[in-house]
Image (cartoon, rainbow, N blue to C red; front, top):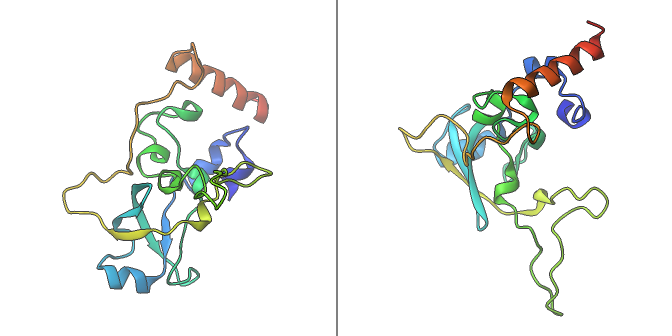
Length: 172
């Protein structure tokens, strides 16, 4: 939740609290599918699939999965190292979501997003959850090439920019 309120600042202290997210599932689902708390699992829909770590929670309904989607980051985003937990263990469910709603009778396609925020409506997709195979990488998937933090800046320049931002924010 904290990441939603810090997009403009990348508060360094938040990374100490939660530098990656989990797919929260009811323990009944885990037992039925043969995986345990903290196992790596696949979440698959007709649109794509994501590998992530799961965490059991009685607060999640047995037929529902849930995560804080904003914690997963692309390699290099926010001037983070390409090996940062946000990109190695963090994930986005966006990869299992269709960009458009199914066509209706008139044949029109509508965006699968909230009309106010534009956020993908990832709450309305059916998924299958199953244990990742032994020997698969212990990292989220899909993985992509690192993105430049700031177009035209190399990693050192981007880090200096962020460090300057933090110093100004904390008066150092």
